[in-house]
Amino acid sequence: MQPFDYRPDDNRYNNGMKYRRCGRSGILLPEISLGLWHNFGDVDTFANSQAMAHYAFDRGITHFDLANNYGPSAGSAEETFGTIMKKSFMPYRDELFISTKAGHEMWPGPYGDWGSRKSLMSSLNQSLKRMNLDYVDIFYSHRYDPNTPLEETLQTLVDIVRQGKALYVGISKYPAEKAAFAYQYLAERDVHCLLYQGRYSLFSREPEKTGILKQAQENGSGFIAFSPLAQGLLTNRYLNGIPEDSRMARGGFLKKEALTEETLNRIKALNALALQRGQTLAEMSLAWLLKDESVTSVIIGASSVGQLADNLKALDNTSFTQEELSLIENILA
Image (cartoon, rainbow, N blue to C red; front, side, top):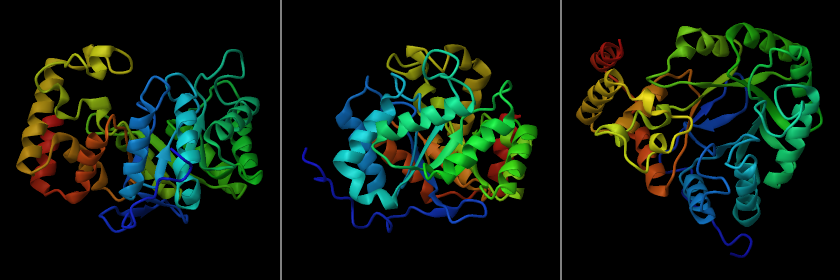
């Protein structure tokens, strides 16, 4: 393919995608964002990865979420995205909102992990090269580092913005107490924490229970949910057992032990409710997150254009009756 053969759909902003304001900021994120955690590595087919990225942008998905170690192999998702930038997206860079992160293991030795200044700065410099970018729109501290002084990690985020390598900064998976410190430290230096990224789904309610969701809102930060489908549990994939080609069968982050009889019964009950609503279980699970205005965006992964298209149907109905909400709570109790 010659550079810039791709031309996005002229109607990409008029086909149903809605955008939500991120806390007290000028950031507007699509209700559904595309995550490159899986299916964009060097073990995956580039043509499929590119087709999904094109389809996403054609449907108004402007936010692409990455991290330094996404792949496999580590770094290869950013390389894949960098190739897509070079071949397709470069003329549309100012329409895109691109994020990356550092904080999980990336290379050997003491600086290839966690949240030191050395680690974060080095990682972001590598990420920018891999993605063919001058800057990212938001850079996250991917997890709280219990051994590095938090002031060092946060001051590095401040300096990254002041150096022009990121427009905004955020935090991911921080416990509420450390997040509170981060919000205050960054605000005092006029580089506000504008996004909190956390695991949130019907099966993972910690952001509600720990007050993370409310805390983000009170601090003028948006909240963006990852693993909204519990890595595939909240789909029709496992209704009749474990398919041989599934992520669970391959092993990895999603273990076979996760599909207990109790969990399977909940999945079946939720699926029945979804069918009553005229949705798939995946669509309803995404819609359930988006019913709450305090959720700025939901990050989905996809293995095909078809799967991406199916998930986007969640946007057609994100309202729930009180009876439906009560039924969901009873199923999950």
